[in-house]
Image (tube, rainbow, N blue to C red):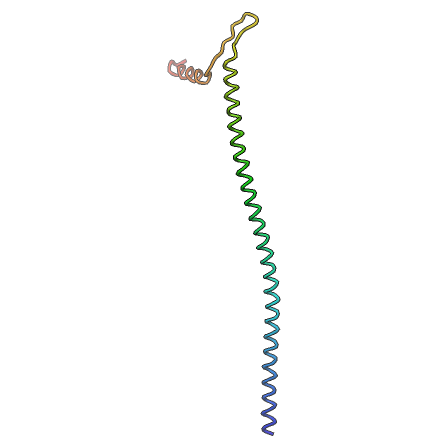
Length: 123
């Protein structure tokens, strides 16, 4: 009888241990599945971020190229503006009807001096 009770108790303990190990292994299997799913999600996120960074690099490089092209275009436009100003300055002011045509240069400076003179003289 003692040996039977001892054997029964040992079997109960063994059964409890097997249940604990079974539950633990089920938990580990669930954790493995969850970690595997998270790993796939992280891989996808990493791939997406890598593509985004690559696209941003291309966009920045294109932006630099556009900026350089704009600088070159501004230089050309400035040269054209200087050339047009020289052409305008070289145009002779001839009247066909006998009236005299005056060319006034630096009008802003002259108006500024006129205003300053008026302030000094009280006009």
